[in-house]
Length: 334
Image (cartoon, rainbow, N blue to C red; front, side, top):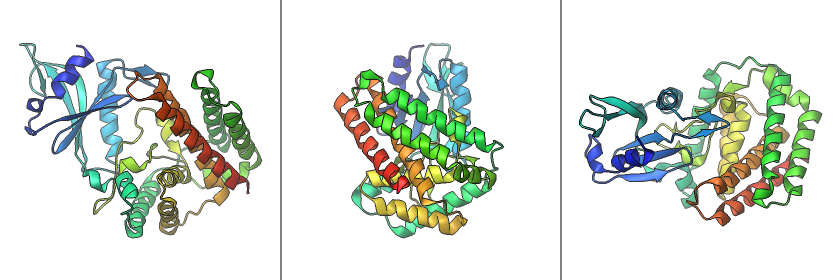
């Protein structure tokens, strides 16, 4: 069954057992998300890239189940389960029920938009106490995770591979960037990795490298009475193997991008107080430089989409991230 038919059905209020007043359909790079009054339903697109394969219904089912399991680590009450999209004997679609499962959806409890961290940052209404509570929650999360069994050399090699991949993509003529900018960043990042091996090796030997969230951004954080973090990067485990300093530095970087650098400082200070883990400042800035470079690459990848957004937006976003990457490279070097 074509994706268009599934999307058309799921965009209808009568598709849902809760009988919502309306349904908002939101398309992302890899999914369609359907927002009802009380729930969110995610349908994965049948896409295939170097880093994921959703081309079969079975692959999408397995990924939905993995997404629920992993996200329950930081949002247990939000991820309700996996629901089949069923084609019955009469040829009609339904959520659940008798018939052939033609696809699968992740069902989530809908979170209040005005409590998402990106909204709070833009409105300037987030408090230090709320961020400290989030930092404590994340510190407890990382502390409970088993350390990954990898060698210091393997960890450094994985970081170098990502730096080189970012350089390769950002240097592609299709994006029209000045190739000197990503080349200079990659030269610094690889040089830092080689000249400060002891800092990275120490993080490994301390057992700091864990299977984290993988995509810790403000739009994935909801500051409720008990903070929750949603939408982890479930489709590729290698991207979740990380240093919490890297992941928290990423969230602090995104706060900085949204003109709230003090919120990032509250987060990092709160994590240090709660965990006793205070990574060197230069290491944090290195991680932030690499994350900003990655975000520039991901922004430019939108230019390969089907024209849903004006290309100028993504080029400007990439350039802004590259400026942040250079700023943090300079701070790491100072």
